[in-house]
Amino acid sequence: MKYISLTVLMLLTLIIGFGCKESETTAAKETETVELTVSDVISKSGQYMTTLKSFHFRMTHELGATEFLPGLNVEEVSGDVQPPDLLAAEFVGMFGAFPIRSMLVAIGKDNYLTNPLTGVWEQIEPTVNLGGFFNTSEGMASLLEKMTDVDFLSDPNLNSSDYEIKGDLSTIHLGSLLGETLENGSVVVEAKINKNDFALNKIKFIGQAKVSDIDGTIRVVTMDKFNIPVEIEVPSISEAK
Image (tube, rainbow, N blue to C red; front, side):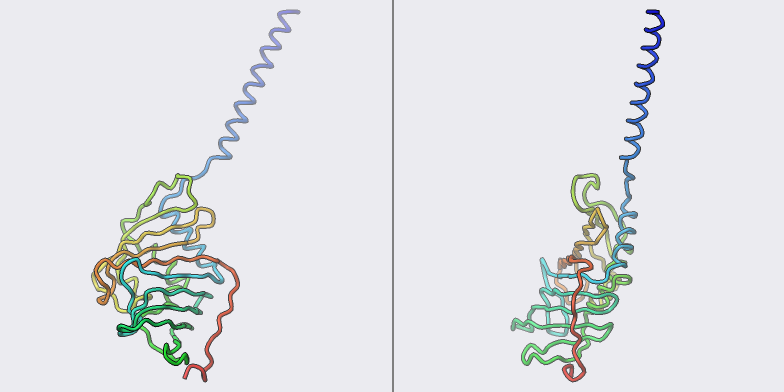
């Protein structure tokens, strides 16, 4: 009987041990995550950005400025976007030697600006098309897919909230934002994409993209407040005269 009891005990030990190992293996498989490539991250970000109903943006310059109209250089612009083609923003900059602050509304390719002196809305034809640039399906969201020499800027496995990627972008792809750009130029792009929802939170353009840019111009665009409802007032025809 002792031998039988000992044999049964050994069998039970083996069964329990095998069950534990199987459970550990199953748990390991369940917690295993698929490692994304940089192309996967960019693709998922593009898909997410095309679903947005609204978001807030801000464009600043670490170096240089952006010529918005002849003689008018914008240093900072921020506002709200309702895709596909509605944007309202405020910007500060310099008109010659004079600092200015003004409001802008873009409806597709139509742009309206408050006269810095009178505050009256006027329809303009800027060299910069912010409305087109922030079109989530054709503007910002598609730029990363057009980059070359793309790679992670930092280890994607680090315990951080964002993927950081980098690449080179031909300046011709910035025409939707900057108007006429350098024909054979390129800028370095650095971007941050949220690891949870793949929202494009920040994108930096390093280098001269327009003839009017100074050497080493750095533009920084940040985006947040995704899908938070906003109200954009479109100037009436009478106000836009």
